Structures are given as C-alpha cells and as structure tokens.
Length: 232
Ligand SMILES: NCc1cccc(NC(=O)c2cccc3[nH]c(C(N)=O)cc23)c1
Image (tube, rainbow, N blue to C red):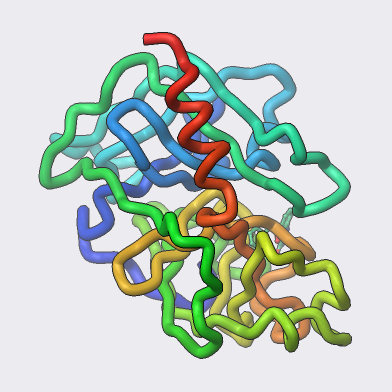
C-alpha cells in the first residue's frame, strides 16, 4: 500500500496473508469459515511450493494471541485466469480446517448484486504489500482510501486503454495505491467487499495506471459453486 497508514490492530479481522516458506506473498479475505478468496496471479510465484494462510494477524513478525497459520487443503484458480491478462484473476483457498472465528478473525460479506460501484465512491484497500517504489515491506497491516474511477475513463489512454472489462473496476492511483504484495486483498466499499486487488500494469502510485480490481459480484456463481462442490 503506497500513501496509506497503519491499520488499527485487528480492525480488519477478515484480512489474510498468503505465505510461502513463511514469507508474505499476497493478501486475501476470509469469505467463509473454511474459505479465503485471493488472486490467481498469487500462485505464479509459487514454483510448486506450499501456501499457508495467516489469519488474525496485525504484525507479520510479532507473536499475537489470535494469529494462526492454516494449511491449505485445496487451491482453486478461476479457469479463465492466465498469466498474460488480468481476466478472472481469482483464487479460492480451502483451509485444512474451519477457521476459529473471534474478534480477531471474522468473515467479510461480499457483494452479490452484480451492479457497478458508482464512480467517486470512496473505498478502502488493505494489505502488507510494498509501501514504497523501492519495495519497502511493512510489518503491520496498512490501509488506504481510494475513490472508484469510472470504467469509461479508466479505459481511455493514457490509462488502461480498453483492457478493463465489465468484470473489473478501477480506483484512482495518484500517489495512494495498492502495490506488489497487496494482490488478492479486498477492496471494501460501504463495509462490503466489492473487489479483489489485481496487479494490473504492475505499476504503483502512478495516476496513469489506476488500480485494477476483480469485481466479486461478477463471480458469485463460481464462488458458490466451488464452495458447494468441495468435499468436507
Ligand atoms: N495497483 C497496482 C498494483 C497492485 C497490486 C500489485 C501490483 N504489483 C506490482 O506493481 C509489482 C509486481 C511485480 C514486481 C513489482 N515491483 C514493483 C515496484 N518496485 O514498484 C511493483 C511490482 C501492482
């Protein structure tokens, strides 16, 4: 998160840190007791290693009473996701067991109505991604407020030049933005998860490349289907 601030400790109890070999690689959001939603691109840097999911954390390094690492029973990438585009950039992770819910670990409701968030709506992103262009990594969860940018404007040059589909949304990225390591985390508007951070142009804090998010409401059937089909 560029240009944001440290979140209040455990004020975003749905936040997940996707970890490989004990290192944070991506964000995620707890959408059901045994399921975390994230971004398909997060599985690229994996080279067949194993994910773990950290819940209940504020600091990545300090011991915290409600912090717990969960093993992943299943990782389901959206079938339409691929490395060349931002299309269908979603990943569902089934935890090895149901998460223990508490004041520090809570499910975040997601938008089920497939209606665009009105441009100008102020939304929030959070994550443990880069806080500077040089790649500074925070220890504590960061957050930032961003206004939604209309798809019509986001699709113009010099912005994203007709790559933003109806299943994506944009936020202004002037100075304040999501960045590497924030992928997979939620965009929250009026207390509801509307988007999942995608890396987009892999540029941070440049107004010419607005932040891009996968619109969760456009994938409700896929999400419900995967969770329903998964074995106990
Ligand atoms: N909203 C934009 C956004 C949102 C989420 C993830 C990203 N991922 C990057 O941008 C990225 C990716 C790889 C190497 C990188 N190096 C740097 C860098 N040194 O700034 C960024 C990156 C961007």
